[in-house]
Image 1 (cartoon, rainbow, N blue to C red):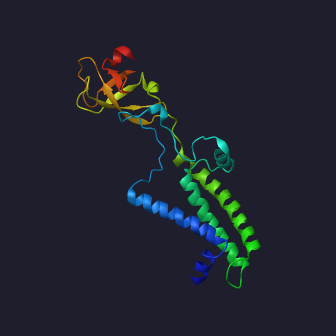
Image 2: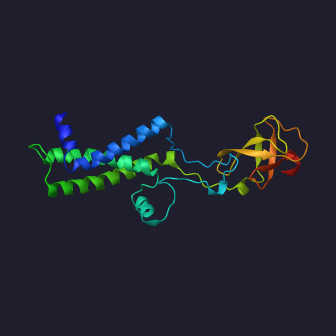
Image 3: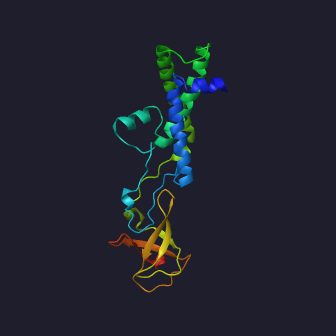
Length: 220
């Protein structure tokens, strides 16, 4: 145990130890604050949400620039950036610690030159392993395509409230990718829509609420 602590706090493993502790601290804080959200989804339900601007936020998103190209080159774009950093830190800490233990048999830290080579080697190895992990976890981090309100016009929705009128109503609709969205709906005509009824989305008003028609059979 003493040797493990000595190697972890010695050069070059201390670099990955620091990154790993920062990553673990982030996840602990996120867990206690309830802000962990690894699901990438598009939400069109809340009033005032601009559906066209909602998309995936993470390393999995198709972003441009140097960082985006770098992530894609090493297959790291399948995971959120926070997960990428954590995985790289973990593999870097393990590989650097093992190599340092084997290279420095008399205790203490590796020299500057040896340490630099170990750090670079551990970093390359950790990126390679993170890419492998990213490919395995890809199904869990598949980004949903951005959904626009116009894309939902013409779709059948299922009412989730006891009534739908000019000022009140909520329903659930599936987009082209079969993802379910809770939406605000309004109907300008008298109807018998209740929870479980189906309606046809025919338009969107200025406030972004969906206009529905109860005459599903006549309009489909």
